[in-house]
Image 1 (tube, rainbow, N blue to C red):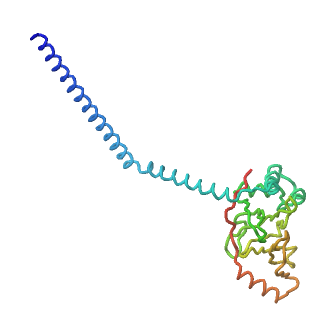
Image 2: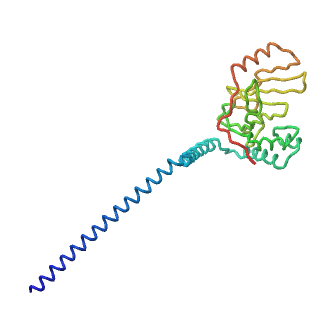
Length: 257
């Protein structure tokens, strides 16, 4: 009986010793893990302090991601949903890729220069060819505007040049305005379209238009021809220009090949 009691006592002591040993090991591992984590954190902080460019790189990456998200929102807001408009954009791209001659470009109702498709390609390659959607005549339908960003300098300021304005008409796209090398259009406040053209040194035309409400055509507001020397028309033109300054197109999307 006494020997059995002694055995039980010895076994109990061994069991307690085992428990204490396991607890001690566990505490040791926790301490070691905490020390390792603290060392890694300190090392990362030292690396950032020694290499601030890495931290800036992370910040720049985050900014680029946020910027990309904002651009995506703008693009989705200006997405073409009318297939004939999409066809016009593709025609500009095709003219540039295939280097169409001037006659073909004009026939397809694209902005015409003596360089033909090569002129359009030049705009695409220098990143200045864009399009946007805008309701110019309050008919709840957007017009497609193809333009060259900062394509000309007027009075010391870079202004957008309208290459073409296209409207929905009987399930197709109707060209309201198509510019040319010496017959350019610009966008002013209150959806006013300005035209400046010249057929020679002695005959220049300056005119202001609006897209007729509910219609797919321009309505003339005032026109001045230097050959006529109409001072009253010139005064009206200059006053309207002062009241309606040039405007940039918002939410524009770049056209690429």
